[in-house]
Image (cartoon, rainbow, N blue to C red; front, side, top):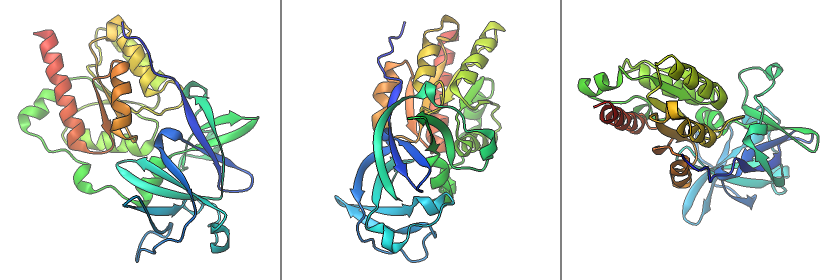
Length: 300
């Protein structure tokens, strides 16, 4: 039995983009917070990119986060009172200019709820939490970055041989992610090579699907799961799978926008075989092929 040594709670950085609404981002994505500094303008950049700053030799683009998600842009006069949140997400250092920093608080992922339906579907919110009787919106940083810095098309579609494709096709693969952007990337990658798959939008639904399939003697062979999800997060999902005798043989790939350096050790602690940083289709498919090799070994 795998012992769960990870902590389901995570620090959440609370900040302001407007006077009334508070927002949050997981601290695992945050490299540091710095006061606003004069920026170098980038010609022909995205309208929400204010410019770049240099931190310890790294050139970091800075985004007006308020403008990026539809709030009034931060004026030049305001900027001197603002802060830049430096994030490490999707293999890229990016700064987000925000109107104010509130505090860091601990939050259990199981207490994060899906966004209310009245907010609509095309929103930059991946979940909501309550703090001091206030509703805090957890920003979907992946969606935000995908709009401003579109992925290199060469990273989205895998390249593999016919033999490799036929190795994956008989396997039952489950993709789990609360981000619509990430789900689209995952499904497009598999559809491009004609490999079937199943999808869940959260960890609890995924675990229920896996249990039901196992009871029907049609178990999933490969699980690809995000880590940061409302309700049952990826670490807890992996832990539950590895502590279920019927699901024990599942090959687990945790697929996250967090730095893989942060994720790998915790992934192994909960029984996952791999942790990959989004999004590089060839890396993901070759991880699945390693899962196929494990399955072949188990049945031979």
